[in-house]
Image (tube, rainbow over all chains, first blue to last red; front, side):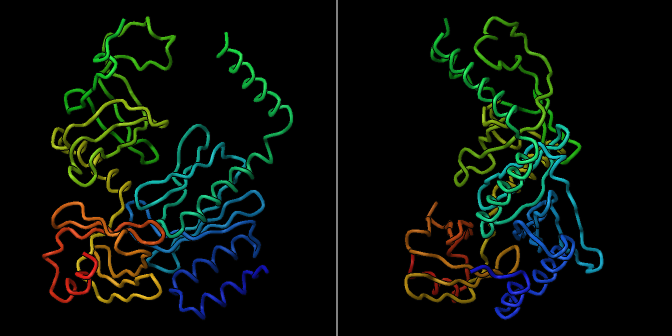
Length: 157
Length: 186
C-alpha cells in the first residue's frame, strides 16, 4: 500500500508531528508540483543547528526547503540534476550529509542527524541515478567497461 | 630501498608548515609545506624537495575521539588518504584553529545531556526525554545496558536506535533525580 502525499501529511498531523516539519513538507511538495519521485526530511543546518528541512526529487530537479525563524522567509532551493556530476552520501559520527559536485566544485546539499540517515542515503542514490539515467548511456558504459578491462590487464602485465 | 620506518613516517602539521582556509563553498582546505604528493608508485623517482602546496579540501578525523578530542587529528584527502597529523589543535592559533574546531564539530555531533527528564522502559526499549546543550530531545534505545558506553570514570556516551550519540560529560555532576534514573544502567 502506498500512502499519497496528502495522506502522509494527514497522518503526520494526527501523530502530533511538529508544525514546522509539516509546513516545510507542504511547502516543498507544492514547489515540486505535488509529485515526488522520492522525498526525505533533514534536520541540521550548516553548523549542526537543529532546523526543519525537506527535500524532494522530482522530474530531474531537487527541491529543498529549509525553515527560517521568519516563516515567510524560508530558504527554497531548486537544483537541476543535469548540472550535477555526482551526489555523495557522507556518513559522519552522529550526523550525515549529502554533497554534490557541480562544475568541478563541491557543495553541501543538506545535513541531518542519524534519524534520517537511511532516507538520505537513498536520496543521494536516487539523485545519482537520476543523473546517470540521463547521461550514462551505452557508449559511456562501453567506455567504462573498456577502461576497467584495460586496468585489469595492467595488473597482470 | 626504503626501510620500514621510512614507510611509516608521520608528518606533523603545525602553524609553521600548514595554513588552513575555507573554500569558496565553505569547506575546510589547507596549504602545507611538504614534499609533493605522490599519486602512485610511478612517481617514485620524482623530486622530493618540500614546497608550499595547496592541498585543496581536507577532512579532519579524530584518532582518539573520547580520550583526546583535541589531539592527534588526522588530516585526510577525499579518498581517505592521510596527508599528516595535527598533534594538538593548540599548535594552531586564531583562524586556523577556528576552522579545525568548526569542522570537527560538524563531523562529530554529540549533544551533551544536562538533565534526564523522564526515562521509561517498555518491551526491551528505553524511552528517554532529556535536556541537552542543543535543547530538549527525546530518543529511544534498544538494549540500553549495551548502548551506554562508559568511556571514562565519569563520561558516558549513549547510542540510540538510529545511531545518534548523546554524551554525559560527568555523570556524577547530574542532579540527583537525573542520576537516580540512569543509575540502574551503570
